[in-house]
Length: 107
Length: 121
Image (cartoon, rainbow over all chains, first blue to last red; front, side):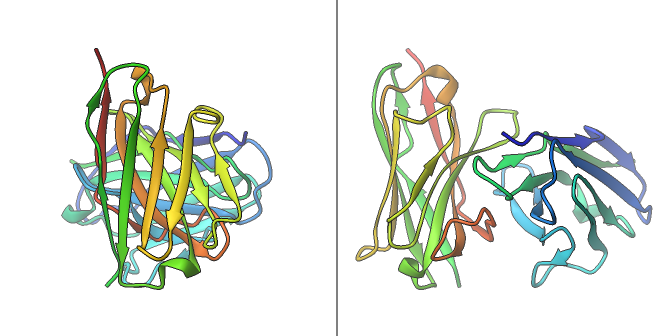
């Protein structure tokens, strides 16, 4: 199985800050990587697919980059409504696996 | 508007069985693969199982292989997860999600609201 290592586990930042989360795959997954946002008590929401493509309707302050084994998720200017847990997920091969999540809070 | 509505979650004893359902609307159900993802209380996301649009291919996580069966009724626009030999570690919120067009791809673009399954004596 492909292991996904996400960092940091938690993050506190101020409104307007640039926030970066990293995700590392245990083997080459090309660009088969998604990023999801999960707000408390809610279902996950797809934000980024194919490592860098923004899902329709998702604000442009969210972005993703990377390929192979190393990936980055960025919020360019943190907003109060971005408080959530963020997960990366590989879809190179079954079983599809998620990172452990990054809990993002406002400072 | 795409909608996915899960049902069937309950409290069940270890060793028991349960069937989850996911009613889909707002898209051509048979044209999309579907998947189940679960989340144990306070934990992260775990992919459980996926099925192609025509139900010709199914996939399972090792943790549920041989105990869970995914199926679908395209005439009723409904996805199912039959769960047998349930264990306490199966306790989780179970989400259904839409996968790729026809084939299982691992890209989950719409999710249901989730349904809680509790396995406890």
